[in-house]
Length: 397
Ligand SMILES: Cc1ncc(COP(=O)(O)O)c(C=O)c1O
Image (cartoon, rainbow, N blue to C red; front, side, top):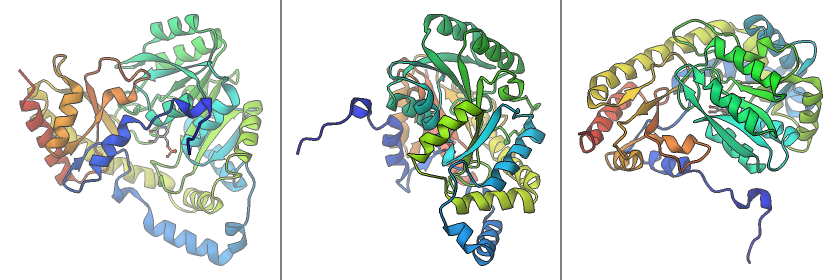
């Protein structure tokens, strides 16, 4: 049988990152390529306790169909949390619980983007979102990032050139993959530009609560007086990715379209998971849980930075200082072929993600690779960084 596929998915291919994960599965390979929370980060005992209590006290509520918008108590809890912690959410907004933030990318694109419309993203950006935009045949326009976030001159040029831009996709805090955080000044500028050129902003903030140093910077959504920002939050990095609970705060007309799209997508997000999140946030000390995560990751981040300072920096490999989130990006000297370096790293039994996997145009010249510090143990981190230094010996002049 010869299968023919829709125009929408015809050109889609498995991403380069998937190839990398094949190697990462080899137990002999030290993987610095994942983006998973640390196994020590999960509130396992609390989730056990809540789950058995819920099944005891409200088995039908846990097991029955529920409403598409999300578990009403969790929506209220999150509304209150986002207002009190981040000053996010106005009267013109509403909140939808989704199956991971990945689904927000899908629902937003489905609701707002026609084939050929432009989505402006940071370059590099999160591969999962890029692939979702691609799956709707959106044209991706990447804008380079500086040390303090997206380059605003380039953004304005892109907005002037692409009149059919529908939204700017940004990860302002501890960006995946670069680890970079956008300055307050640039957040305000991005908001002004979006207003001026009549485009929306999709602000994706799964790492915002994982800051290890430096000052808190307000979300772009907190300045939103016109209803031009969709805010995506996720429980994946602060509770568990396996429970697949995230949320979008968006102007009501967009919220309503996303609800209709979600009905045809998965009806509603797993109600048991939603209830567990609500209990964790209301009956336990959620702020203390976040503080525990920050302490855990701050230590791991520092441990990896110390190793990189000792073994990689002297070889001319630089990295962006980690102030939060789960990643940083290393930069090889210009004369090193990054693809060859990453392949050789795998031969030496350490796996990192080549930077071009995160670009809107993967064929662009690129000298970076992403490393993660949350998933490996300290022993694995030390081994992995030393193996990267060993790999570099063949390349660095
Ligand atoms: C920037 C960014 N957005 C969204 C997601 C998807 O998260 P979720 O597990 O909530 O679907 C990730 C996951 O790594 C991410 O890094």
